Length: 319
Image: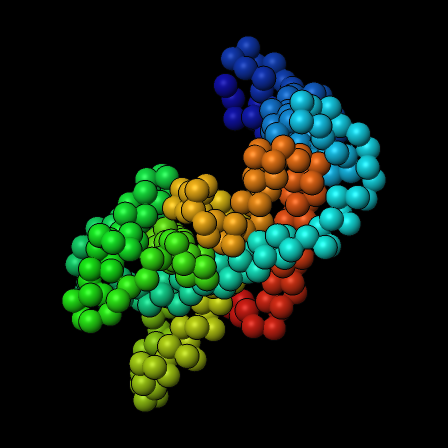
């Protein structure tokens, strides 16, 4: 095929391209490409519509209804939302959710410290350390909960045994009000630590070493370098990890469900909003009220995330 045929320009100023071995020419389209692009994104739209938008619309409708014991619903208006305002269980579940989220945020400074240790120059077996820390992330939550439930056992658990060797009488971790939710939150830290460490470690690797070398020449101590260089340049990664940690903490359910159990006397005092939603929807069969609790959780997550995005302008540094 002649080279002049490849870059031939039509009389209208458009570039013509060969359509195939036959040597024919085809003009490039500039306006309408037909329905082919829509067919490619149609599965995504269908998935979002069927599994997200439609269930959300149903939940909004159900939150204004009351369900009978054998199915069927009647319109009750804002009655479920009036119950939310005066329900002590909702307030207690909200406080437990906030406590769980607050304890879970402690994983971020721990992840920064571990990421700094693993990213030290000259450290051997970095990949092995990253894999070991990441294993809890990909482990089934039910398996994690069962193992930690045995470790937390007040009579023969290894945690109380280790405490007894130094003269400390350990509590019944999962059967003591106020302690159970914190014990479960510590397990949540353990399961999320690997993911946070990987993200923050990637952020550390993105900081140019020349900055540290210049600071060292100026006499900056390691602690001064950490405060003046590492933390400010790592704030985008810290912000991302903070948002994801808070959202994940507000949605916690599986750890509580397996570790505490339905017959535990402190389960009701330690339940979160998602656990309360499960209890109302599938145990009490009060699906309308459960839908209202679910929408309350959605609004809370949206408000907290919006607040985080507003505040990040004051402390996140984008280099």
